[in-house]
Length: 312
Length: 312
Image 1 (cartoon, each protein chain N blue to C red):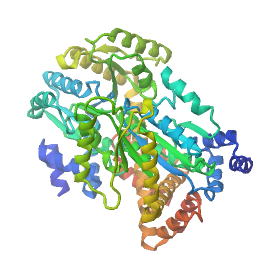
Image 2 (image 1 turned 180 degrees about the vertical axis):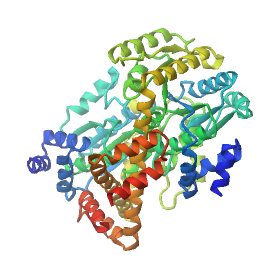
Image 3 (image 1 turned 90 degrees about the vertical axis):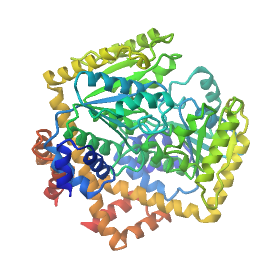
Image 4 (image 1 turned 30 degrees about the horizontal axis):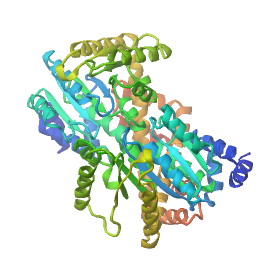
C-alpha cells in the first residue's frame, strides 16, 4: 500500500500526499517506509522558515509571499507550526477570504502541524513533512513558526533561508526578539512598516546586526506591509539571492551535512530507546525502576544506567 | 568537590546552589553526580507552572505570588523559561524595581534558563533545576513559561499545579490559548481583569471548561490585576487547595510515577545515544553515514539502523 501511495505522490496526487503526511505525523510504520522510498526524490525544494511573534502579521506575509511565488510559476508548500496561525485554524474572516485564493490553487499545498505530542519531537516531524513535500515536487516550502522557545528554533533550523519578522514597537520588541531568535535570521523583515516607529525598529535591528556580523552574507532588513502586498517582491528577490549565495559559497552543502547529522542522531536515539523499552516493558523491569524513583529510593540517573544495563 | 557543594547546598548556601545549577544546565558530569546525591532530599516542594503569552502580565503575577508566599513564611524558587521574561533579562524599568524587592529577599531564589541548546532538551533540564531547588529547601517552586510550542507544554508537565494565564481580548485570544495549552490548566487566571471584556473572557473560558470536564477537580477561573496585587491571595489559596486535592485523591502519587517514567526514559535515551556516538565518531562510521545522507545515497532511517547495528 505504501508503494502505491508513494507512486501516486510522485505522480502529483494531492490525496496521496495528505495521506502520507498523516502517516509521518502519527509515527506509523507506513510513514517510515514511505520516507525511505521518497528520500531519493528530494533535495530540490528551497525551504524557507518564517518566524515571528503572534500579531506580527506573519501568516498574511506567508500568504502573499506564496502568491508572489505562484506568479513566478513556482509551486508552494506551506507548513504552519504555530498553533495560532490561521493556516492551522481559528482564522479570522479577513484571513479566511485571502486564504481561499491560496487553498483553491492546485499549485499550493497547506499543512498545519499539531504542535503537541508529535512523536520524536516537533522539529523531527517537521523535517519529515518538508521531505515529503519536497518529494511531491514543491519548489518552495514555507515553514511558519511562532519563534519562541527552543523547539521553534530547532524547527527554523530545518530551513535553508530563515526570515525573522518583527513589527514597529515601543523598543522592547527588538529586545525580546534578540533573546534567541535574531541570530538565526538570514533576512529580517519589519512588517506593518506603514506604522510609526518602523524606521526606528529597522535602525535598532541594523545596530544589532553590526554587532553580530556573519562573513559572506549581509542580512538585509526589509520593510513590508503584508496586508497590502507591499515589499513582497523584494522579499522574494532577497530569498532567491540568499539561495544563490548558499549554492556558490558551499554553505548549502554544509547545511545539508549538518541537517543529515541531526536527523541521523535523532532517529538513532528514538530507535535505541524503543528497543530498550520493548524489553524493559515486557519483563517488568521498567515498572520496578519507575516505582523506585517515585519512592525516592533510586535517583533517575542511576535508574537509567540500570535500565540500559538490563538490556545489554 | 561535588560532595562539598552538595553539603553546602543542603546547608542553605546560595552560592553552592548557583554553582550546582550551572553544572546541571551545562550537562557537566559534576551536575549528574550532584543530582544523584540530592535526589533523596527532594519531594518536599510544591511545583507551580505559570504559563501565558507575552504581554499577559505573567512575570508580574509570578512576582506578586512569590511575595504572597513569603508573607505565608514559605521559601520560593522562581525558574524563568520564557526568554522575554524580566526574570531572565530585558526587564523594563517598572518590573526591575518590583523585582529588586524579591531579589534582595534571602528566602527567594530566581533562576533564568537558557532556552537554547539545553543539553537533553529544555524540559529535562528544567526538571533537573526544580529538583535542585527542591533539595535546597524551597517550599514553592514557580516555573514561568511562555506556553507556546510543545517544548513549553512539556516544561509545564513537570509542575504539580499548572496555572494558565489569559487576558481580556477580542475573543480570538481564547481561541489561540485553546490550541494546546488550556487542557493542561489546573487553575485559569484572567489577568488585567480591570480591563473591559474581562467578564466575557472568563465566560468563554467557562464555556470551554464545561466541554472538557475533569472528574474530581473543578478548574477555578480567577480574576487578577497583578500590577495592583488584586486577586493574588485567592490565587495562592486556590493553589493550596489544588495541592490538598492532589494529596488526598492519590493524584500526587500518580503524577510522581508519571514524572519518574518520563525522566527515566529521557535519560536512558540520552545515555544510549551518547554511547553509540562515542563509538561511531571514533571509527569514522558517523561521518560516512552523514555523507551518504547528504548525497541522498541513503535515507536517514536506514542510516540510523546501520548506525545502531554497527554498535551492537
